[in-house]
Image (tube, rainbow, N blue to C red; front, side, top):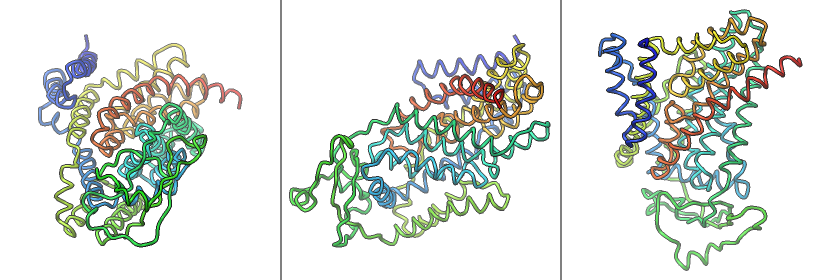
Length: 472
């Protein structure tokens, strides 16, 4: 049996063993990757270890540290309160709001720019009673859509390679196809995970434990509708007098089960809240400015920089944010990406691609190449997979059996919709941004969702686009 095939079999076996034995997947993957690289691929150990994704580690550590400060100092709670207040009795709009925001940021040069929405969106989902799986799908769908804009990396790579191969691909057609596919996924996730957790909100939960004893309030009440979950930062219950001062009225059950109207005091922003919000804006602006200047923005480094600034402003919050760094997710992604790097070095990915292209039936070949794109992209760089597999798909796209634009659009969509998988940068960031008690369930469900997209994406998109191309 060829070494590349053996390596793929070992990769699958490690997944099975880690699942059955309940061993941390990344911890098991990393030494196995080293053994396969040295013994089967003949790679120096230093080269295998060099495949550990330090950029992903810096990204996840930087983002979780920076937004960890924003959480412990109470800024996230105030932002959440504002978002939930404006959503009111229409929490169903929240997934589409974050879909649009993530898409807009991702379209400005770097798809990873949309990740800045994760540390805000996941707490908003928790506080508003939304299933975190739904918010994760919505944010990833926005990143996937925006990433294929003519101004962003996914779209530039796909469009450029297609045009160089003589494929007539309109960049706005590519954007439209991917956006519609992702919108369909958000709607599907809304149907599957859209049931709200209607429990009475604790108004004190809008305050962080780090500031609940010091925050001052104004005398102007603010009325807002919320669907709540158990407060993440405070376990105090309102006193009897508090319940009298801030009455709770049930809205129409037919309108939305579990929604309550709460009159709560408007909290005054302290100095550290203002500084944190300024740094959040600075993070987004920095990412956009780097992308506009042709510089690949490193969100992790930028987040560490703003985190260091906030730690200097108030050291106690900087110290409290250190435990917020999600090392478990970092090592899980690191071990898997290291192994995938060994597979790519051994030619296992190219072997799968060429095997798919040798299938006699064009439609089946298209299905297989899109499935491979989704499967590998769930564990590796989407940009890298597009750069590797789009050229492999060019002979099929130019054969005349399948419209070239339809195949490239399907390939791009299939390679990006799986990024919600916990093994990709996007999925890992979403899990790291969720509350600690939600992460195990979220990891399991996002794994199922991501892996199901490997099959659902090609099976739905390829025949649909082929039929559409023949009608046009």
